[in-house]
Length: 199
Image (cartoon, rainbow, N blue to C red):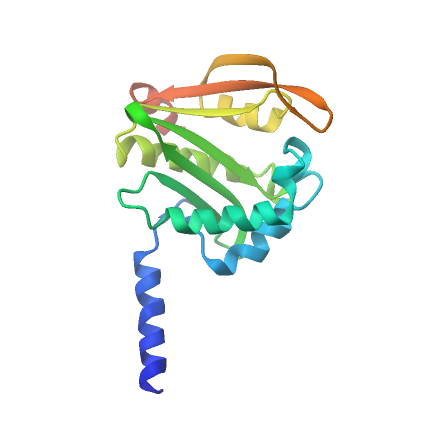
C-alpha cells in the first residue's frame, strides 16, 4: 500500500473513532455520513412517510440539505444538536433518524422518523428512549419535549408510550397540503425519567 493509501486509511479510522455513536439492543445511533445521503432520500421520499410533511419538506433538495446540515452540526463546539442516523444492526441499514436539540434554559426538543417498512416494530421507541436518556444523563437537560401533528397517531402514541405528558394542543396551528393541522406538545422532566428508564 502506498503512503497515500496508508494516510487515507488512517483518516477513515480516525473519523470512525471520532464519530458519535450509541448502541441499543437492535440499533446503532450514529452521526450521519455523506454515504447516508441516498438511503435517507429514499426512505423520506415515500408517499406514506411524507403524509405529515409539507410539500417543501418532502422534496429531494430538502432531504439533501438536511443530511448536509446534520453532518455539519456534528462539528459544532460546543455541540447542541444530535440528529443521528438510526441503523438496524442485523442489516446494517439506515432505517430512520432520531435527534435531540438542546435549547436555552436546559430545554431540549426531540425529533424522530422511521422508514415506513420498519414502522410498527418498536424501533422508534428504542431510539427515542435512548436519546432522552442521553439528554438527561449526558447533556444535563431539565426537560425534553416533542411537537407533532395531532393527526399523526403513531407519533402521539410513541410520546405516550415514553410516558411524556401532553402539555398543549394548538388548534389549526399549521397550514400545508391545502388544509389546517392541529399540533400537540408532549414533554418529560428529568425527575420523571426513572419511570421511563425502567420500561
